[in-house]
Amino acid sequence: MTLRVGLTAVPFTAQGVELALQAERLGVDSIWVPEFWAADAMTPLAFLAARTTTIRLATGIVQLGARTPAMLAMSAQSLQALSGGRFVLGLGTSGPQVMEGWHGVRFDRPVRRTRETIEIVRKIAAGERLAYDGEVYQLPLPGGEGRPIRSLMAPSRIPIYIASLGPANLRLTGELADGWIGNSFFPETAAVFFGPIREGAQAAGRSLNDLDLAVAVGVEFTDDVEAASRRHADGYAFTFGAMGSATTNFYSNAFDRQGYGDDVRAVQQLWASGDREGACRRVPTAIGFGTNLLGTDDSIRGRLRLYRDAGVTLLRVQLQGDVATGLDRQVDDLARLMDLVAAVNSEATVM
Picture 1 (cartoon, one colour):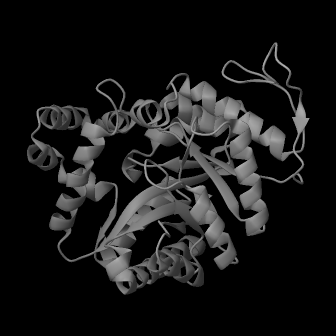
Picture 2: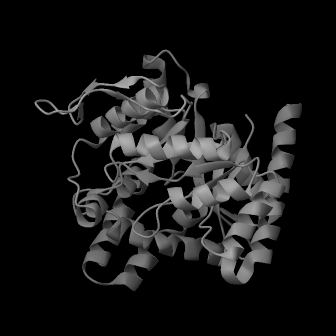
């Protein structure tokens, strides 16, 4: 198994764009632009399409329901044309707080919505006349004056990756997607995620090897692993306490399935009570360490082997620091990481 590196980036400043350009120079596989309740993911990728030549450009992720499936396909085809075929559509359902509070779209039937959106996007991208009779989407709308329409764009292939955490959505990923966008991931418990993905793939006559398995990691080179683990663990208090509602938090559920349920619930209780500092301190340092690449070259090299051996094919890395004030450090860290990945991949070739 060969590891590749993708970079999570927000290229809205000169420094951010320069980091993307340096990533391409270093041989990074892809740039991943997030979308939550700030800027959108599509616009900066269009800008990067004009500034880069080889690196893949991916949404990480666009939120289902924020755009109609047809609008999503239109944007994806536009970016595929502008980038010369380098665009990757990474999508996910987000959660009820964002979809209902920010977009005003009801958060319901997320797995079904994912399936139907992918099927519609692929019909449009393939140049088919759009007629679709689903549970969430019916095109054209029944009883109206609409009629099936074919896109005027040239047909194109749009690689589609799904951000999924729950078992049903993971199985759907295995069935339909070109890749998986994962987080909340420990290589030691990879089967929690890869098991359902494999089930979905096999049910569709595919295998796990047919998917690009992309996992998010923070990267920090340091001699003080304990302090770095503590800092990264602190950040999960917001994830457990605020990234979801009292009844729906896909991140918390994912950690629960990996053996951290009691810890997650304790953090949620502290967060809900207003004790944010206590919530941060209650997150085990093992979570901060196990879901990131922290430490010296030797320790990070060892963790890279675990990801490789677990079956991960792409690491979507978040670099330490602020690109506005630490561009040189981030470029150096990225180059250092690329060297370590190359060394680990070289070991895999020899074996």
